[in-house]
Image (cartoon, rainbow, N blue to C red; front, side, top):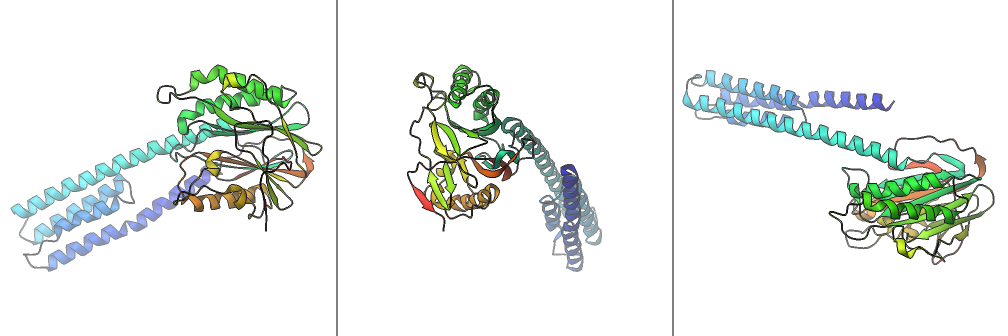
Length: 403
């Protein structure tokens, strides 16, 4: 289906390009006729170079070359009717037009080759994102999930923010969202360590504390091997938020490792779940020896838990104002995780003027009343994708009411 859609798009682009090519061809005809009807002192032939230059803006090198040949032929025709091909002026014009048309075709070829390379790089980046992030399923247990990922480097479409959901050995779903210090391709290796350790340990460890400790040990052990220590000699760490959401009951747990606190949407209220027992970020190996203590919270059916990275709350407007996430979310209609993220995405882009200076990731997790068996399914990444998850508790620092 996707391949067929791409083929149709390319077909339409080709035909639209062929339709637009009538403009430079008409321009050649107009310039030629005008020059032939003008006196011998008027020379409009040099203007023919506009035709191949215009064609290069929307067509490939072959079509541009064809228009260039037509322009040179028109110049030859003008020379025949205005003094012959042997005049010095006409010979110079034909040679100059031929050279300029060839240069335009060469530039068009280089641009098309670069576009192909860029397209392949984007394809590789998208594949890497699929392999690394593994977009969550639409439903997992009693949870429904939507996710949003915005990379600061548009050409790579992937950065240092991470998230994942996995089933535990018991009836529970475990969630992680994190942010690697730094951004772009240099942070992918560190993000892969966290995601790999989390997915491996999510079903192996009985408690959330054991899981986070195992992830911390992996980060401390492997970060030096993958971190970009040549160009980034500072400390390397990952802020993370790890949660355990049982299928039954309303009590869930989370461990904060230097990550922004999640937001809980319950009964038209937005509550900041401030940690009572925060832990250092992952990778600060000597500081986490005391272990990781969990913070319980209540997560009821119909509640939506919003997890995010600091790229969201630190997004600045052109005037320098930070994005007021909790306040804005309180004004959105929280009908579903997907709709919530659609409103958030458009509002965030409007706030920043479409310019992202940092990677940003958001997970919206809703607990539903019914339980659906977990059926993993991979879907292609998109700006907003639906999936399922849940969380909740009222331990607030600030509460905004939804009007």
